[in-house]
Image (tube, rainbow, N blue to C red):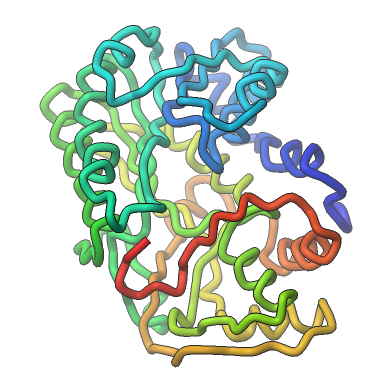
Amino acid sequence: MVERIRDTRQLEEMLSEPTEGVIRTVGEIEGDITVLGAGGKMGPTLARMVRRAADEAGVKKRVIAVARFSAEGLERKLNEWGIETIKCDLLDKRELGRLPETHNVIFMAGMKFGVTGNEPLTWAMNSYLPGMVCQRYRTSRIVAFSSGNIYGLVPATGGGSLEGDEPRPAGEYAMSCLGRERIFTYFAQEMRIPLAIVRLNYAVEMRYGVLLDIARRVWEGRPVDVSMANVNVIWQGDANAMAIEALMYASVPPFVVNVAGPEMLSVRRIAETFGRMMGKSVLFSGFESDSSLLSSGQLGHRLFGYPRIPVAQVMQWLAQWVQEGGQMLDRPTHFENREGRF
């Protein structure tokens, strides 16, 4: 385990390092792999992990990343990693129809931030687009990203929401994510499309995530809101690996799995720990509630293995990263929002 992460290049190497399970999965599944919505926070390193796994497994596969690619230099970087790229507005039926057929699709497209005031586009991206994708890729195997937000708030003492729990989404984002699941499930059952739904709860890395949000507030002397008293987090590289391995479990009816860290973490204790690491006093705001947005990741851990990187290690890396002025995406997670407004 490295003591510090020097720069973005090393970080992306670590986030895209395939596990043995990923190498086995990519080596055994038939056909090429398309990642739809590959331009977001997780997409580039997930696509690269697939590419590296195929190379290490010694199999010839096309790995195709599809997105608008509005971020400067991202498409070139993916090409340098050996990944094919296609610019596409997925909501444009003609552009979607021109994408190449592949046996496997990982669906990462969606909208979270900027939902408030832009609800129609949110529902189009999160709930309408899945139906278009199923019709386009009716002969493929699909892994579709969803969110732990669909469960709603639960007591921290209960161990987190399980895959079979009844959804209680709060806010337009969470409701549209449940809509995504329902539309994918409908078309998958009608068209007999093998489907896996991955409910992600807070992937973290150096440039983005709940832990970064808290660390920055501590470092900058701003109050840490403890209204959402507890959180799950998982190292993004581990979340990437679990999502890729879910390809092997895609089925009709769909396979559903939470991708979440094993601990129910106290936001207050996270902030206090960062304060000790950084030599900073910690300010707090809000009042701790007895319920939070929490998912149980036990099923994923049994199937895919325990996360490789513990939270304590991520926090150590993050404290150094923030103090040294490492690159950040500047996209707050708004994890403290209990009403689901993003």
